[in-house]
Structures are given as C-alpha cells and as structure tokens.
Image (cartoon, rainbow, N blue to C red; front, side):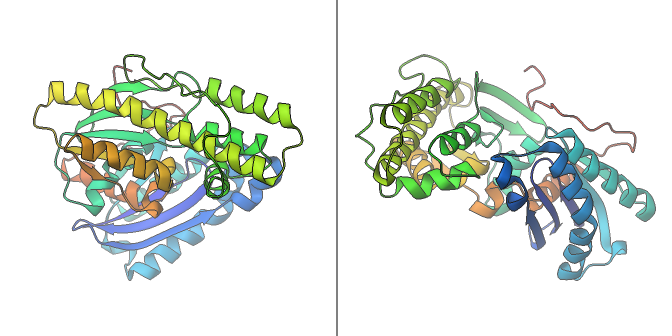
Length: 340
C-alpha cells in the first residue's frame, strides 16, 4: 500500500510517499523561510503563492525518488486543515485532482492528527497514549484513544509555545524562525540571570499560557535596551527554561488525568515543531522517567511540518475505510476533540 501525502498548511511545501509497512520511500520538504524572513513572520498570501509555484514539482520528485508510478498509488492524502486557508486549498485541490484522474481514494487529514499519529510511524505505539502537541500554532495535551478518537485535557488560553518563541526571538532581534534561534542563543546563556515568571505554575488543570512570559521578556529587554550579545543569550536561556518548565508542569498534571482514565497507560508522546527543541525534549524525558512512562519523540524531521506524517495518517485512516468525498471543504479550524 503506497500513499502520496501532501502538506501545505503553513510555510512548508511538502510531498511524500509512504508504504503501509512504515517505509518512508520519499519525503520532500521545501521551506519558505527565506521568503518570509524579511517580514519577520509568515505572510499567508506569500505562502499560498509559493505552494502553487512548487507543489507539482515536489510531487513528481517524490514519486521519482520513491520509484513509484501514479498507478502504484493506493490513495492520496492531503492536509485538509487546520491552517492558513489559502495554502490548505492548494494542497486539497491538487490532491482531489490526482484522486480523480488516478481513480484512487482521497483522504483529508487533520494536520494535528498527522502530528498525533507520527509516533506510530517510527515506533510500536499502542493506543491509548498521552500526547503533548506543541507547535507554532497549537499547544495541547490530549489522550489519543484511537484514529479519530481524541480527548483534550488542556490547551493554550493565549499564545501557543511556538508562537511565543517566534515573538520572543523578534523581541531579542534573533530573526525568524524564532524557535531554532532561541535554542541557539540559549546555549551560551544563564537561565538564572533574569527573573522571568513560570506561567501557570501550581495551578490545577492542563491549560497553558505564555502571553505573560512574553510580556515579562519585553519588559526585560526594554530595561536594558539595547541588550548586548550576552544579555540576549541570557534572556533566551531564561525564556526557553520557563517554556520548558511550563510544558513539563502542565504535562505532569495531564499524566495524572490520563492515568485516572487509563490506569495502565505507559506511553507519553511529544510531537509538533517545538518538540524538536533539545531542552524541551530532555525536560519531558525526565518527567516521563519519573512517572515510569515510555517517552516517544519522533525525529526532528517528523516534528516539523512534513508530508510523511500526512501520508501515514492517511494510511491509518485508509485501513479503517475512512476516506473523503471530492466535495470536502478545506478548514481553517479543525479541532481534534469534537467536543472542543
């Protein structure tokens, strides 16, 4: 079973071919960072036009590298949302055209489900498991009970962790994308020099909040302005430390809620672009060990936006007979938990 995956929800144009036995035969990703860097963030219209310019070429290259013909495809899966609607429309329309011409099923994949199931592409992970999903646009804790079956324990009440990192990097003059820039600067910084707050510390529940931390960082920058290189490194280190601490503290609460529902639950998965951060991975890894849990973290290339995870989610859904009609409407918002 070969499935073509297409991902165009944000600022990466991606195409992949994945087999039902978990072999990733091709995984093409074209970053748009250079196009968005002059603006200090993602411009939706620029992103959509870039997807239009490059997606067809990437699909052809993915098939060539996989050594697969159009006739070999069992289905085509594309991100149907959530995301920047212009980009999502490009990917969905392309996938529908391929499905129609090749007479194969079309699968509209929730981008968040792509992240949620990516751990099952790289490891033997059984349902149910606890998921910390952290990316530029999303910060959630969910129980993954099965394909299409999610129970949300908590979400952000303001900024997502990745969004907060992008804004922090801009405040510090580190450029775009913010997450990797913060991580690089933090390596030579002192986490204790600046007394930044620890968001939601000690509060019950599993929700996140990062806007107060971002505001505190802005005040610290203003008090020193202009900050020197070591100031920036120390602020980046403090900011990263507080984000990691907040993620770990809220996940600790989620573990209790997860085990209350599933007493024998033993797997914690961290996924999404922010999961590529080494400090955050280490912090969540220590938390998992403290609670006797197995941590599964997909490799960084499967944490950032990619089409391999979309193809795999398509395979998971296809095995259950879950396909979509060609009149499927792209969705800018699409929560995993239907009760959210």
